[in-house]
Length: 258
Image (cartoon, rainbow, N blue to C red; front, side, top):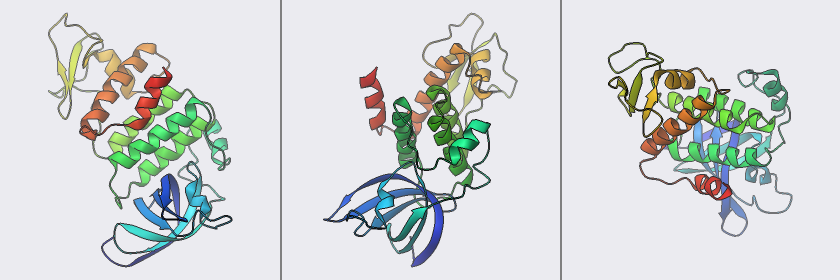
């Protein structure tokens, strides 16, 4: 923050927290109207501290903070009892899950939620608001709480994340602006798009895909195994490109579990 600022009861999610000094916390939160913010919760580790909620990820909170510099001071934290209209969308199961605000995803869903948080920490900038990305985060967590297929939830969120940050992938047209042909082969080049390959070129390896695979990813046809495999390959490469060499700890855990 460049100057003194006071924010009251902003809707936010905690992405990460860590101990600070003897009794406090450093909190990274993601607020709908303010983007990612760094906060100091003084005394937040003390028993019965009202700021202790800020240590709990995957829970929608109302946060108040103020101060200047990279880290503001957290003054208040409470549960958000009512869900915003923007997050009450997608399938009815998602809408129901929004009202179970205290629930934490379980099993593979928990690790997937941690992965989503790590993506936000490493690909967003502080105080860069993305209300639409906040909504996509709400939907992704709701899907993981409801037991939706983890891979489909992750691929959809990754696509929405890149699009919200202005890094969206064009998966409907080639680099010449022509609609993709399902049976044709393409090489997807980052920040350029799908480049047509000669007839008979192999797909299914590196960044080569069929037009049908790319269009399936764009349209979210997650019931198709081919679409899921293509999306995993494509989006891993895209996210690695924008991470610029920074590792993702949750990926290491995924690999160890496999």
